[in-house]
Image (cartoon, rainbow, N blue to C red; front, top):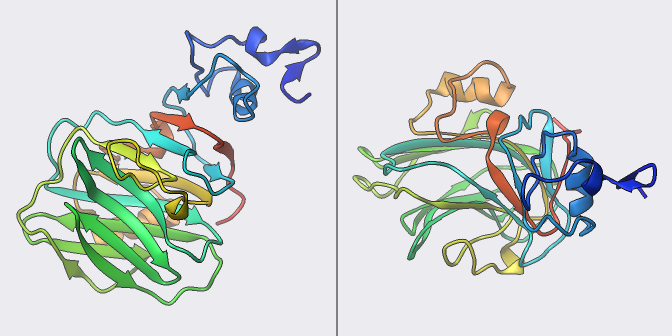
Length: 253
């Protein structure tokens, strides 16, 4: 049994602080055991800000339950933002990549892939669509930004910009969000539909409350030194895993 050390379950050797587990504690395997339902004290698995460099969230199956909640102390509306992450999936149907909802307001900020080569960015329930020629299946690095003063939205694939679009000029993206990976929210933290669920791997996720310059976006893509993230930081991420989600090393570039 991989979840035991000798004859003792890891849950007893490295007990959770309260009902939950900190993933960068000695009980890392304890968290992996919980993914299979082997640790009764962990539901959900709430983790302390570990450095996830070189790792990914793996969503191994289609479901209406499996997801990761990203936790941020965003207390002021956003006038600008940049969001970057890596993803790898062999799905040909549509799926959510990043879902940001407010109480009573869905699709406040959503990154959705409709089909191969077609992505949409939603701001305040309004969307723009970006098209790109893609090799499928292949890992992808995505950056998207939006500026309230002009309404200009940018979408970058693997360090290359797509055609700029415009939406919601003068709008503010609301604060106190519920942010979910793996599912598209139709309510605040719920309303999941397995036909829109993500199956694959996501990593290197960062979010800023500003629009990064083209050079800065290319630095993020290359994994070089870039501005410190102010909203979400893969190297110090607060999150909560729910259902069958596993953390594994990233073995693709």
